[in-house]
Image (cartoon, rainbow, N blue to C red; front, side, top):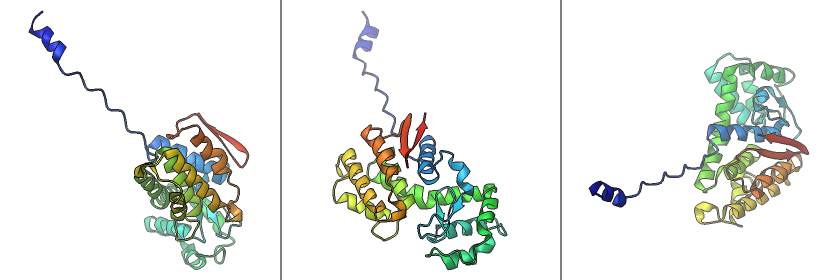
Length: 257
C-alpha cells in the first residue's frame, strides 16, 4: 500500500452532477404543448398552425376573433397585429383595413370590415410574414408576460401555462376579470411558492379565481378548459406538463403522447 492508495482513499468525493433545472413553458417542447392545449380550447384542434387563417365573430362582443390566439377587432390586439404586419410588409392585403380597425376598436362593430375582411384575412394567412407577425404578437402580448410572471411566482410549467391560458382569454386590462385581477383574487386565498406557499394550494386558488372570472361572461361560461384540462394535470401532480397528456375540452378528448 503506497501513497497512491492513500490518495485514492482520502481524495474528496466527486461532486454529484447538479440536477437540471426544470424547463419553463418557454422551452420549445413545452411551448409546443402550450400551443396545442390552447388550440384545443380555442379551435377544437391540436393543429394550432392551421389557425393562422381562422376568423369568425363568435358573438362575445369583441367583433371578429381570428388567428392563432384569437386576436379581436374589438380589443386592440388585432389592430396591433395588422399594424406590425404592415410595418414589415407595406401594401399587404390587410393594410387597407387599418382605418376601419381603428374605428371599431372597443366595439363589436364590423363597420368598414365587411364583406371582404374575413376572406382577405385568410389570404394574408398564407403569407409567412403574417404568420410570423402573429407568432411575435402572441409572444409579446400574451406568452412572454405570462411566463415571466409565472416564473416570478415560483411556478413550474403547469402554473405558467395556467397564467398563459388566462391572459389569452381575459387579457390584462384593468377590469375585474383580467389576468392581473384573477391573480390578485388568488393571492387573497393562498401564497405562491415564491412567497413560501404550496404550489398545489396556490394553483387551486388561481384556478378557482379563473373559473369565477369565466362565469361572469356568458360566452366563456363553459369552464371545461380548466375543469377537465388544467385541474386534471394538477391532480396528477404533473407540474412540468410531461407527456403523455390526456384531457377534455367541451366534452372532446385530446391526447399528446
